[in-house]
Amino acid sequence: MDKFFGIKKAGSNVRTEVIAGLTTFFTMAYIMFVNPSILSLTGMSWSGVFVATILATAIGTLIMGLVAKVPYAVAPGMGLNAFFTFTVCFALGFDWREALAMVFICGIINILITVTKVRKAIIKAIPQSLQLAIGGAIGLFIAYIGIKNAGFLKFTSDPGKNLVLPDGTVIADASIVPALENFADKGAILALIGLVVIVVLMLLKVKAAMLIGIVATTLIGIPMGITILPDKLVDVSMIGDVKDVSFAFFGDVGFASMFQDPEKIFLVIITIFAFSLSDTFDTIGTFIGTGRKSGIFDEADELALETSSGFKSKMDKALFADATATSIGALLGTSNTTTYVESASGIGVGGRTGLTSVVVAFLFLLCLPFASLFGIVPAQATAPALIVVGILMVESFAGIKWNNIEDAIPAFFTVVIMAFAYNISYGIAAGFIFYIIVKVCRGKFKEIHPILLVATLLFIINFVIMAIKDL
Image 1 (cartoon, helix red, strand yellow):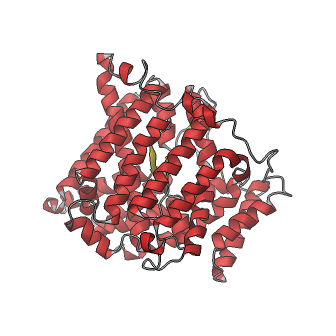
Image 2 (image 1 turned 30 degrees about the vertical axis):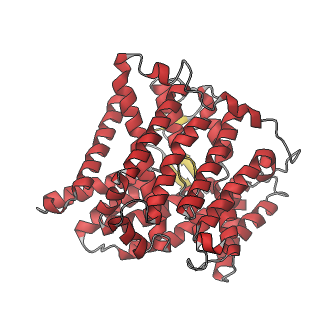
């Protein structure tokens, strides 16, 4: 095991890798229940998507662990599943099988741009200052997820300024104002207790502080009525329902119907493009934000990434693993899979090799018959771990030359847009756009890497198309 994963070489051990896997699993296990809740609004089988989510996560994460041998988990992406449901199916009127076909094509495109080194070239083209900004911004993004899941925030919007979707989802405009929760809510109190527990344990240098904090908070939640114990531990009744959604787009509705209407062909192409752009930059942002700081992608690996042919570096293999997982997920019956930013929680407790990913994949497979048991861990128990991970990741801000306006402007917009817009890709897009504006205004256009320029133009085109569709 040590020889296969290179555990000692990475400065880790089996115990640490297992703890890291458990930590990552608990911080992202919510996707098992949230993803089917979102996708089932399109008419997909809830139980079918539930099983598809688990299988896609387990398979994608196993590929990441056994092929790339890095501690990242792959699962259907939040945001991408909302785009699948509310934009592609509801707003644009595509059937869910047609949307799955688009996701499958997106995965094939991602495989092609990975094999042809386009993804690698994009990473190499990103300047150091923006890479540092992306790393710190990922930290704030993760912390914000934690703060939100903990129930520490409440939001108030002006009356009459809200759009209510058919499923009851409320979309508020810019009048919405966040405020700190008054902590009368039991869930917020439990999350606060969990945060204090983890912070104290980390200050005392207790190993596995995050995992201990998650377990302790879950147990404390039982008498508080937040942690709900299951009626039965084993339930295999839903496993067969995956047939309702898997390989569904190979019938009359899906590939066969997607291109029948000539007027919709351009819309189909643009939608696939939007899927691919978000998926690609979500993954790149996660790898840059977590891999460089932790040493998972060290200098030797970066050199191999830049100079080697084939898949010699861990980053090459990780990008390929992520790309293949999207098409596999679509075949099984779920929206785009992506490398999960919550993997940073496992990396934060010392996970450095693919063994961490293998543990995560194994735990997800265990959830097929034992979903009710793993589902008892409330969001308030895992949220504090995400907040602490954010603390650990913002260290990269120190490497940015904030006194240099040319570095500060793109870095600033990368950080604030990623965190406040709740979107990794949009933060990267903002950083790219302002980086080019800065270079043009300073008369340094020649310093802009052509790939960075093309990527920025694609982002701008995507934003324009999104704006036109909403008119």
